[in-house]
Length: 318
Ligand SMILES: Nc1ncnc2c1ncn2[C@@H]1O[C@H](COP(=O)(O)OP(=O)(O)OP(=O)(O)O)[C@@H](O)[C@H]1O
Picture (cartoon, rainbow, N blue to C red):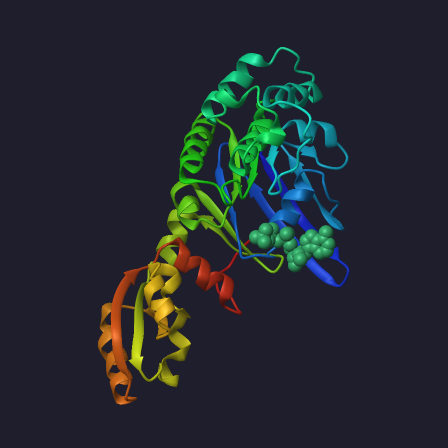
């Protein structure tokens, strides 16, 4: 049985078709990444999965339980960490987790609650009022809440947005352990290095569609092209080279200095190292003067930029 089966899910907000017929299957035990730029439809899909929004068409089943017809059982299988911080501010961390356990009929859950608190670095905050916690600590409580009933399928919607490195590492250690113990994990994140390191399979979404769905290794291999980053001291990229542009290069090198200096920067796709010389010759012939040259192997960030910015994706399957 699959952990999650999504079939032809469509959702419209007014005139906006937020989901255009999403179909994908996530198997038991997977660490699955759902990636895409802002507005791609990831949160909408997760909201439908969690029963917080209704699909216009299509269906989702969690371990065989339909999220509409068999909502209670589907929900019991799921632990969802939402993107937004929403709390009842009157309770302590422990009370919050006990109340959450009560929703699932778990009245003697303190051993597991203690383990979660320990693993998320919240043990010394157990008696603190949730109202008094910092944003990062509140996010830890949200994660803890999603885990109280030991759900076999854990869905994390940007769990590390705006949190410090320590929580990211603590969280991934714990979530990876749960995955090793058999829990299925579905993750959306804008930290692509996290997705690359953690996810065994990745779906890329763009404008309500899945534009690629494959194993992380295959995805990287398929795009294992090379990238040439150029920054110009004088002149600009010749028009003949425009079709090769895949970005500015600043995103993938993190070169804030070059981005601030205002010089024109481009990341160009290379098919092989042999492309470098003709490209440099074309720049020279166009009268440009280069300030910096860098050759880089593609990582998930490059793949993401290519898949989510190209108008037509070849070989995409969903
Ligand atoms: N309740 C709503 N009413 C109207 N439009 C909505 C609503 N929720 C989402 N949308 C729109 O649907 C589209 C998909 O949004 P969604 O939040 O699912 O994207 P996302 O991939 O999660 O983006 P992000 O990475 O920014 O979280 C966006 O264009 C968004 O503006």
